[in-house]
Length: 64
Image 1: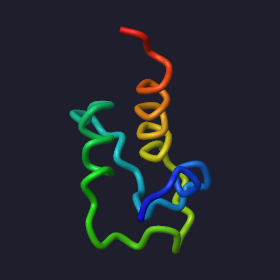
Image 2: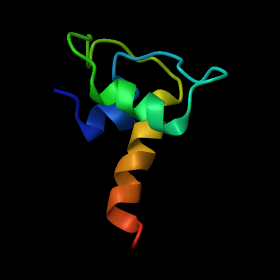
Image 3: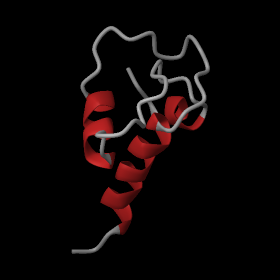
Image 4: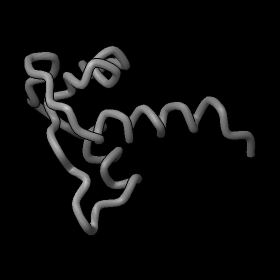
């Protein structure tokens, strides 16, 4: 199970996804729907974890 701790410690099992054509939304969607990834096994410094963390913070801080 992917947790906020994994997002903050860069141990999501996901490497670099910020390439031309990827958007903030589809990177977060990709991470949310991962299956069978080695969560927590390796530190991979990149932006995907922080993209998803940003989406979580939006849910709790943006008033509509």
